[in-house]
Image (cartoon, rainbow, N blue to C red):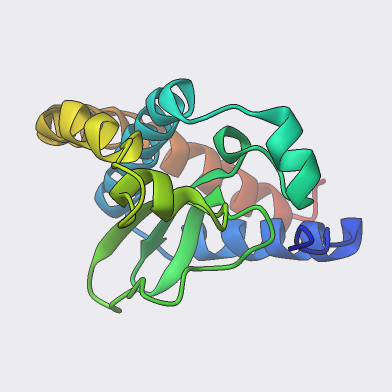
Length: 174
């Protein structure tokens, strides 16, 4: 199975611009929650990558990237993407992004990942994502809370800078 087509630089730039616009529509606590979940997801993926199978010869023979290189994390807030990278694969089909919640998704896009994670009738399971998830899920409250506190503490300074910029623009300055 060939690897997915790599998006052009223009497509990637447009996606990043949309993420910035999506983040601008959130209040500080929602952004803090999204930042905390993104940090947690990146920790989970990093730990899972360390335990994921690495077999460059088998990957090259199949024409797919190594499983350890296909981990992704995305965060959606209020139905819009606000953080993470999907590696050009887009949001997984089963991932729901409700318009009133902040949601994080972590996954491996390798077409063989679920066989290793869950096993088959001929092969025992060799999980790598589930142990990383279970090891870090207990830290969710602390990670998200710390990110929300950091956002809330820095909100007044950002509001003052924004007001100063608006005042300069209104006065005709640059």
